[in-house]
Amino acid sequence: MERVFTDDAGKNMSAHRRSAHDMQTAPTGGVGDGKVYWHDGIGLLQSTRAAPLDAVDVLVIGSGYTGLHAAIATARGGRSTQVIDTHSPGWGCSTRNGGQISPSIKPTLAELTRKYGAERAMAIRNEGHTSLEWVGDFIKSEGIDCAYRQCGRFHAAHTPAHFRELVEDTERLGREEGVPFEIVSRGDQHKELGTNAYFGGVVLTRHASLDPAKYYAGLLQVAKDAGVAVTGNCPALDVKQEGGGYSVTTPMGQIRAEKVIIATNGYTTDLVPWVQRRVIPIGTYMIATDPLPKALIDRLFPKDRVVSDTCKVIYYYRPSPDRTRVLFGGRVSADETNPAVSGPKLKADMCRIFPELADYGYTHSWTGTVAFTFDTLAHLGQHDGIHYAMGYCGSGIGMASYLGMRLGQQLLGDPDGATAFDGLRFQTRPLYFGNPWFLPSVVRYYRLRDHWQIKRAATRS
Ligand SMILES: Cc1cc2nc3c(=O)[nH]c(=O)nc-3n(C[C@H](O)[C@H](O)[C@H](O)COP(=O)(O)OP(=O)(O)OC[C@H]3O[C@@H](n4cnc5c(N)ncnc54)[C@H](O)[C@@H]3O)c2cc1C
Image (cartoon, rainbow, N blue to C red; front, side, top):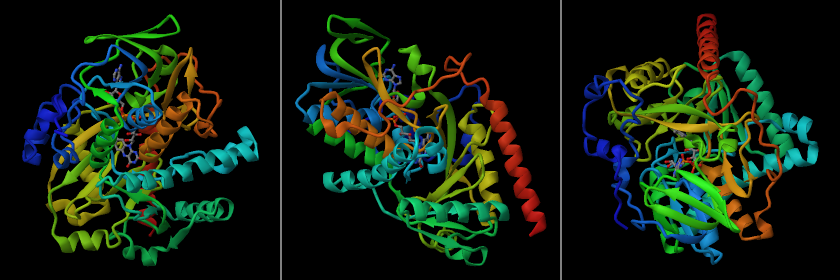
């Protein structure tokens, strides 16, 4: 498979040796998506079919993990399947994320129990654990070479009070859900992470890491082998019910499909306004440092784990799979911004945690848009007969893969496709139409609160 990104993201790649200085002085007029570190490793990804089929059993809109996993399931089930994307295949979050795999269910068992009762709550929590295991098994069984590793996560406490709370919560997780963990005191912290910025943490040993773009490239090959047609630069502009099925308008012509799946997550448009009103698009930002000396990386990440922290506006980071760089991410701005602006802010926050990195620059700064939901759960289901799966709230490597696959099975009428998410109400709010006008003030408040807590904990320690 020749791999060609045909859009602006791809053009950026050819300039991947541009210096950090060039990037920081780049024009900041629009919200460009920057230069993605992972794209260097996969070359360029190309459509498997230049023009879409004009009549299919299943049309999938959106070519990320969700869309491709759904498509692989339907194609393997004998249905002709076409995937289309506005940009080149995998252009969205699925080739630009942090590569950290977790169970991805944000509400706790207690919160879910209050809403849905004990049995359903545990079933939802278990879907998270299943998705984490399932994606690892899928990668192994398909032989996808993507640096997948069950490396464990060090989840660090940004204040002593957060450490106490984290220990309590994690012990409960172990007791109630059988999740294995290790508690790390501040005294032992350097065995996990070369910093004094935190107050201990916990290790969640089942969490994993991978190279997200290599995973995507492998997935695209699996889809192609299963007979899926994937066509980039082909946005769905309109969808209409027609006869027993649907007619979808694209610049490359009409596509008639018996069934339609929307798999557009953070890039959801008003194609189906009902869906757009239920997801909250949020930008998140990353940088990749210059190559670093081996001894430094070994000191900062002695166990090669993925890392996150207890800040409300979370930081997530890790060494690159080849252990030459730090890949550091977070939401560093209240408003959506340009990677040329977010890069220096991320670097400053990274250097607060690792002062040794002040002498090094960064070569890549990029952004992508994830989708949150009002109940912080992912959702799959159908509206007016149009199927969807989305809303992974910032951690969708495992869950988007797993729910995409389950949704594909549901379209086949396969009873294995049933999930604990089926039938959950997909909420919206009055006056919300897809533009999260409330986000900047919420993010601003939480970032200020995190920073104040960090400062106070540092002066008291
Ligand atoms: C910087 C960053 C870091 C992240 N880190 C992590 C992490 O460490 N761990 C983790 O689990 N998750 C992480 N995520 C989230 C994760 O990447 C996503 O949850 C996941 O990739 C979602 O996959 P998807 O297929 O649903 O959506 P996407 O991969 O975003 O794909 C959606 C696609 O829909 C297309 N589209 C939209 N509208 C249309 C239309 N009308 N017609 C045709 N196509 C359309 C878009 O072009 C896009 O390619 C991160 C995300 C970002 C941006």
